[in-house]
Image: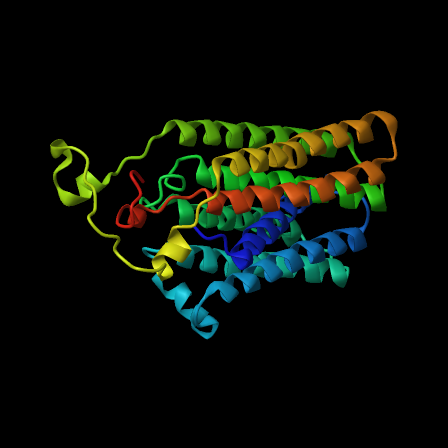
Length: 312
């Protein structure tokens, strides 16, 4: 699949924003949030900004962005529509929390709103993952780990941003350090397992199956379907060379998985917490963009059987 930069920005920025909102909301709900209301307001403002920028960028991939409102109407059958509905509903408790912190309003509802914000963030990211996980026409996406990986990396990048925010404003609690390590390791394990399983899958569909004669040998087209590349070939026939993919996977493992773990351990052991976590945030930013670009670039659409692919 052709990697659309607007969708890459959407999934990475909104994922990190929802992860940040999730951990902030949980900390507020259990009374473990250090610092005063201004720190909480600043963190939720960052989270909502990342979420909003990501959601807005997703409309740039539409041929008619002005019709995006129609995406909310098919929530019974469409994961895209469910994501939109969940995203809008999450703004309600998160926005009320932000207003309560901004105007210093004390209320027993803050814990309830925090829990609703955390649930809404998790549900929205899950719906985002299921947009791709529900597509049987792409074997790399139709995989049980895809929505879990979206949740895992949202949790890991959100935890890293949360820890960095605390480190530069107050101090980094030990539980936040452990949170960064656990979520990063968990996401890394899931992604590496996903790569291994996808690489071992030769593909479910063949040209012979599409023709209804898989038992008659290999089918070879006499002429190409088109004399020049068309829209389907450009959008769904994009491929990345295997050696390039391996290098980019290595870059992802180093920047998104290895570097944040090492830098967080350095922050915990030798101090200068803000500096190490700032470097970890930068490394993770490079890594998550690379990981998401590969997620699209390595996807093989079944339509390419028509254009000469052996399997999909």
